[in-house]
Image 1 (spheres, rainbow, N blue to C red):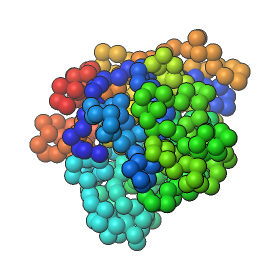
Image 2 (cartoon, rainbow, N blue to C red):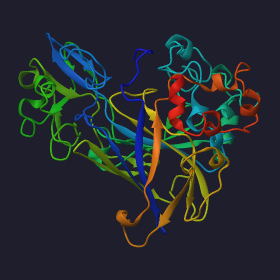
Image 3 (cartoon, rainbow, N blue to C red):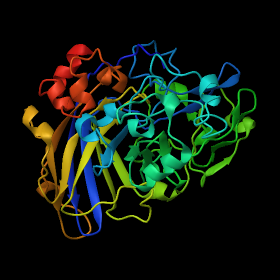
Image 4 (spheres, rainbow, N blue to C red):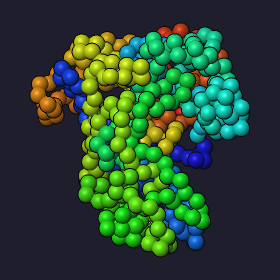
Length: 425
């Protein structure tokens, strides 16, 4: 994506409710999103005699003529969660994970450099880009963060065994919601998927030969969605329509049926998840311009190696984010909050903010929360621009010493209100 792209909307309000019982924790999120179609994602389209990938951003996000857009990207809600193990996260939240060289930033490291790197490249993780990581994954002082100076594999394994990573669950409108799950990830030296199988995979495709799979024509006439119909506003209904390609219902691609101008087939077929990747359940409904999403998981999972275990009476640091129509850095994020399970937590950031930074998950009995009886918190989310951890710890930053000593929070740095952050974006 173009590094200079900016969303039209700079500030969002995420209405959040949190509850738990003896077995599970539940989150309920609501936010305004007037554009329909946020459940369409990463499509293969037959146009002008060949197959093309229509990825991001979505046509309703950027100002671009309708006949030129080539993007579809799902809406998402996610959050970072820590139990106090990651130094600096309580103060700086997600900004702790954003570094020079990451993908989607103007200075993103080239694929060639990543592939030749001992840790990230072909001899190590087998990656082609640099994604979120925490400074503790790097050598040097806790705040030093050069991606080229990752700790050894043995050291990283030790950190992970000690719980020094950030939990990162997501609800995805296309790639997880139709299966009734979220997807689960964790951040240490990279944004890793948790062990097991996520709710989606990728199908092979070729510009000439097309994809591996298509929709069953008995379910979707013509074996594919119609790009031109969707461009005209005829988006499949989020609750009752067919817009995701489930491997259980997919059939082998047949060009005699599905190779027509404007035919559109998801590149990311869905499948049943398992293992730690399937810890989070989730369901979302888009209605009258508003998303309502619920996510829940067991307090204690079978996968403590990459999932933070939760205990009633304890407090955690929590920071949510929302994506609309684009991925990677182009989202809206919150400052860090403290979350207590049945108790009010104490947070050093509280003295610097107009609203509350101290959230309480309320205890309930039975199988599901009565949301009408659970307090709602309004969480401001901002577009973070290009501010990185490098910028914050740079000697040129007027409060770099306070930041390096973790004696200040994002709330204090940006004058009590996240909206003030936008003045510099």
